[in-house]
Length: 263
Length: 324
Image 1 (cartoon, each protein chain N blue to C red):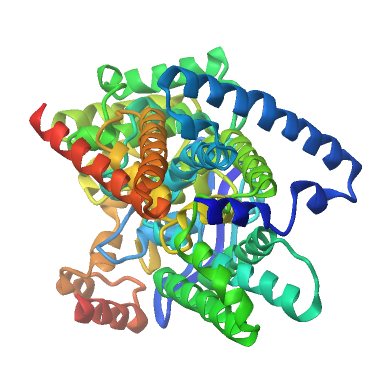
Image 2 (cartoon, rainbow over the protein chains, first blue to last red):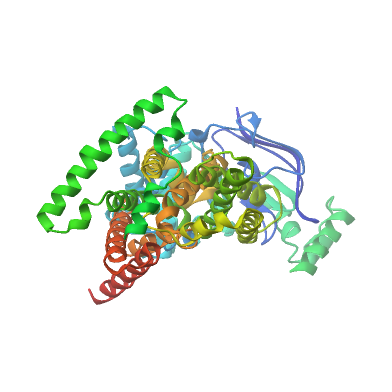
């Protein structure tokens, strides 16, 4: 079954198109890396996939339902970008935040043994169990980022969507975090990950979607390195385009020029 | 003090009148009368015996203390969900629209001889205003603080116009709603107030998790399919309830203080959210009881003294945090 499917999705902020005619399917059990330059619409595409925003045109389906109508919070978890800035002054402990991951399953009733176990397990998996009773506001950026990842893990969802979840982590923690994502994916969890570090994501994700407003590449990670999609999407080296005789036509070039002009 | 007592006696509506058509509520009102005489008067009289403070036996002081004890629980309970979302102004806004509700009630009474208790008018109008604020923020491009400012001034403007339209008679009574008063809390008012406090406490307890999720991280709450809009509406309505409960003692202008000050006082004290809620309630209770007592002893306005004690508590909490 398909976890997420996008069909000719267009989304603009005002008059500025951010996602332009993107179609792709994320099958269940996939580990998809979303890459693209800054401002390429990766984060927006992720929120569209989750139904947090509705496309101007085209269709987004989440587990077969229109994403914005999808009501089953138990099946989806989301770690937004820049969570380290969330609610810095609010008095709340790490455990209280991670417990929120269980709320979709248990919004009103007493927490069961399974709820408590899932919270403890999530805290341990990202190595913050000893911080459980600390105030979130007193943590470092990296620690705080783990809190939000732990909340998503505690939710034990089928789909995990993460927007640059390792930005505040050091190299070692990043390594172990990706190992953890690999394990979760092996256990059947569908993962969609926005990542700016292309080297990391192509090594870890099973498939890559390369985006710069339009979709430049969608396929197995191994094929991504061999394709010219990266250069085409990033538009960093114009000569690559000129020397390769691919089907990138005038529209692509003008698209890139426009992007360069903005940045 | 005698003019104060006569004001109480002249209170236009009793709790019984308010609810006469409804049998169930009659029973409840009987229960409440028992609560007021047996439980409240009993415990206050005991306190008066122990402490030798005679004013604890005065019924109007007992009602004032009872009111302020209720407000001290629900104020920070609701306020904390507002403060951490930068919505502190919601309380103030709804208080000013509640004033319009009082004016509507007085206006109807004066022109159409329709007897609407002012507090009921305040509750209805503030609740409507709570929904209007939601709509303004969600469906128009108005920034939320601008929308709040508009509703705040709009409510107060409506109130002032209605009062100027009514015979001079009612403007006499308007000060008590603007600045609050210890002496004018009738049995009916206290009944309404205790019921509203109960409703608010039960609602916050029941919806604690979705409210906390939305307050802490609205985006993730939406991704988890928590009904964010419903929670926002619930929070607005609960705020209207709290504001109307506290309005008589605190006054329209100062009523929002107990939604905000105890919460920021408690913020550095508790480690967890629940802990800070508890500290917030303690801070509000201390400010409320001390403020009412000072107001009686020195003949000063209750709302003002409560707010000043609350701010004093905030300062003490800040200093003690830094010196520990």
